[in-house]
Length: 544
Image (cartoon, one colour):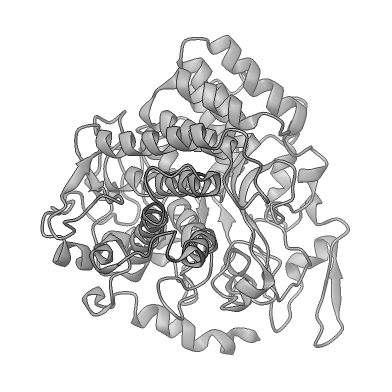
């Protein structure tokens, strides 16, 4: 088995999970005071490099550390956030570098996982600020304005990946509570920069995205890894959804979706979400073979994709698995039921696929793949996902792309927001048209007996599973964390607990580096570390 290959890294995961971050050079906004910027006129090549690097670092391996397989930018942040919610887990073993998310020990400020998530976001904010400062504020140069607009959109995206996790949502009364420090191109005092309120952070997000929408009018991007006006509309739709500005969220989501169509039933009847060229992607990360090769274990292919022969998931049997509470609610007529192998390790998505072991020449086809074992692959577990495909089954290049935004999300935003703005029949029609046309021809939004809000949440949980939305959705909807019902759960024992919606343990803690260098930050407190089987009576309205 290839497990020996990971032996050192597995031990490193345990040994350094609680390493002292005070000994690590800070990677977030606190470094900005020492960053001296050349102007665009003096060094245009530097501005161009900053701009390209800003997009590369969104998902590049080891952008905070040099050798950690759990360090892969915003894609890792999406994965971590989902693992902290209810619907996805990976086995609790020595090869699980994300066990802190399953246990919710990620509230320890000195653990590497929350440090990476905080630092990666503020590194992007720093890069965006650097780009904005690289050009004269009054420039009329179209290329400069375009870059500043995209930089401001990235800054907004970064804060959207921070704000929901450091304070309770608008719905939970968190609007005026402290959130995270705001760092812009105008910030000068980084050692005395207190937490802004949730409302202030979202004002910056909306202002940045409104600027981007205005300035990107008519811009045609060279590829979907960059940001155009529709991406900015989509990001603002997310912000408005979190702010419960329903009409605005629906309108922006509709504009973001223009010209895009969902993946068809046939297209999602095979492992997908691997290529930025997929027509339903609005924005994504274009992982090149060269970028992935810098550290292939720190990629989505290594962790969430079950078809890589050069990663942790297959070699360490730490596959991404669906919580059976959600899986059991998916109708058999829904094509998405096949996004996970069933209890017998079978899925129609495997039809026509072949995994060949280059070392032995042995191969497996279709439903033989889950039990096929090589030096690089162990058997699948029940409910292992086959949703996320690889360019080649048994790949070693790990250059699969990642969707940051796809049209299906925008349609689901429209359905929810239109209904909550006061027109539930229209919202219900939007939802039914999407699901019946593209996922389940027998779908009826009423038959489940859920409220329409919970029905949309169910559809989001299934459609967007593993893409980074679960934690934020649970929080903005003011829902409890429900991972098990009594003993009815396939979740590992250490991760098997429920948590009330108002538990202070939801809130992330600030890194020691931040609190040691920014003296105005007052950390989150409250809540207690969850324990196995706690709150067995909690229900969420979807998996009841």
